[in-house]
Length: 370
Ligand code: PMP
Image (cartoon, rainbow, N blue to C red; front, side, top):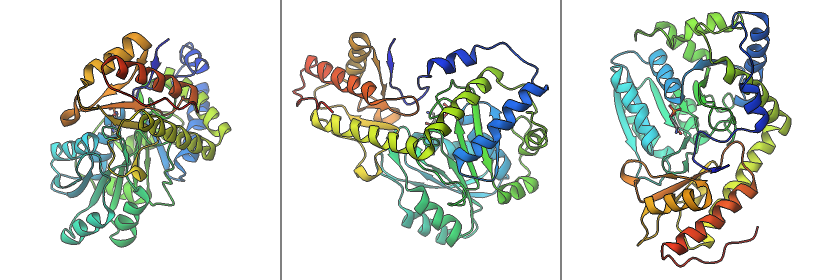
């Protein structure tokens, strides 16, 4: 069995795989109602919110698109805070639907600066909403969402729309305490279940915006989803199998306790970073305080070809990591460590990394034993 360490889809526990293999049920019947109603309540706990958390059958990008089409109307001004590929994607979606996008981008490897967000909002008082990525999977950077939210909500009262696809359920995100209006995440990351579902929390202010919003929408229409939400259904046929997995994974997460889940991710994040540095490697994030606890971006050392390194890891050690995207292609490798991950999985990656780098002529330091 390969050690799947890409930043999503992430490995699923055996019992989750068994659960998703279950026989179909009527998605308009009482058993499904029980499953989805339980999921709604538990998702609210994981999101730390009293807001509705809609469940849509789509990938994470679908969740982002749902947020855009319900909150923004053509011509609305949006401030897009981007620190990489997925932040840029939010801007692309908003532009495609006719919003006017003001782009606040940071150099790759850096986190967004809350002071720059403040400046951009001062310069653009007519902005309706701010879109931001909590954890940028392409660079392994976690933004200080709490500080950004303070600026966006407490100082300017704008709508705050968050991509939490590679953070929610792994890194603390307090939806209500931080006043996040729309938070979108997906099943195949921290939730330890296969791809296919997106979870989207919607605040009262976001519901108001959605009511007045003029962007045409059908599949992703929040109002349509809400009317079925209250009945314990979804408007369209849901990914029933993934719902079985969700039921079990939410049970596991809440039994472990979200504080413990966060602590485990923090511990493992540190293990990856310390292990990579001990091999003589450099991290991409400029300031380690913003290094992600769900995905670590490590620079490919000079003289080593990125594709050869990922190839050796896969072929000789069964360790599957991701390369860089866009301008970072060949320059970094990304090690995913969210959801179903243990210290032993990471030790395995570090051992394989040392052997592969040595084979490619890079002189590593010793692998730590912790
Ligand atoms: N945003 C972030 C931060 C992500 O990590 C991803 C998936 N890697 C996406 C958006 C897109 O999600 P999906 O591929 O499920 O559409």
